[in-house]
Length: 547
Image (cartoon, rainbow, N blue to C red; front, side):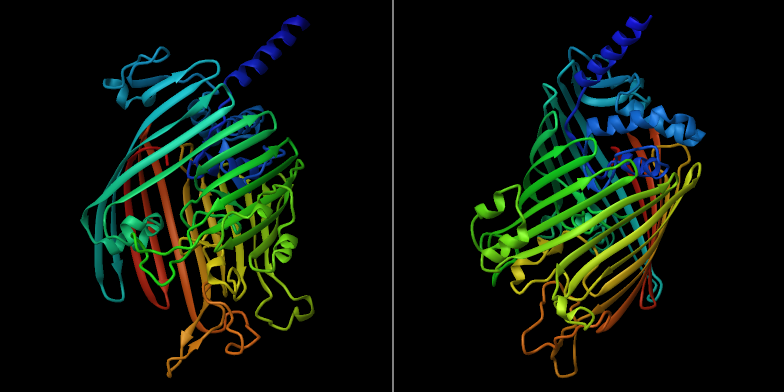
């Protein structure tokens, strides 16, 4: 009997390796919200969501760890867990395809289309290779009413595309998603106001055309080592709503990455290519003059059972080719930046995730842009930093509550060379808050047994904006990351929230429901109050995709 148990254990270990899938699961996938929920409950040791995306195998490992503790879950969490276990093939899954393969011959163009089968254009899987081709489509309608002017706007637009992903020989993962969409009817300005992703799209925002998006990567993994090249959305930094180091506020950028990951430790290094602001030329087209701009990033993290502590460093440089000094994965960027004649923008940070007890989790990050120690406490403009801290509680079986505060000091992210701002394509790639701002937010999540929770977010933001006086002179209070302190023109002191005050109340409530596998409906209500001007917007989304 003992031999049978041992052999069974070895068999399942080999089976899990054979099914390893090393491609990334994009950060927009709803499984990450569920993992945060269960991470807070204390069911995921040596685990953190402070650096995303994760590979498909890492998510499988996390779901399996939750399965081992399923006696601690309520009925709604168990139902959601089963949905994800089916999707990620931890339990038996039925597939339906349009084009047959040697492993899948169930026809999707039948009653199976409305079933809970996983649906593909094409699917193939053996002991070491997987190929998945999935169609994508969505139809979205937005209605907005501005109370102060009783101004009504609406827009309807559609989007079609394909997602192609899988792994080869259990070591090489690949992913490509490409979509194209267009306005069907309505006001383009409303889409730019309500859909941040469309604000990022040059074709839509600058050329007044349709919109297209593409993200892709190739990942090689062998034991503890991995190497990645691709353009994908990345998140880094501990928080509830804020990823101070890397976020989806700016468009994704192309980068190469290498790293080492163990149970209780991870190191990652990334070198990427950013889009700088145009220099005395049009924003787009053959005449656009965009000087070269690069970023190097690395992060060390230790992951004890109760959370994670990480050290992060970032350097931005421009107006020259790739600098070999920053290609060394093991280096200290701040010292290198000084040795290279102090031309570049180096930034560092600390982040932590702490679970003091099951059901409570504290997340926070501190970013240090620049400091003069002898001038700490004097309001000196070049003492630039940002930080956030939040606490999330999952004290009820199916509900979480989170509170977070974030603060960005004046002039943070800026640089004496405006090309070296912590931005990609004119948008900050870390915080969505501008310098000289803060935000307090409240989040509620209700897990009711489906793939998507009901989410409520309320936030209050304050921002001190640069402004022009009656004579047309710019009064610079450090509220614009692209405008640094002007020597002998601007004062040496910059006090928090000086300038033209802008107060914003922002609230959203959203819910989604899977009608049948692959077909989802989402409803989102958004209210925004800026200095007593109220805008209400309702978004209806029907989509054939998870995210």
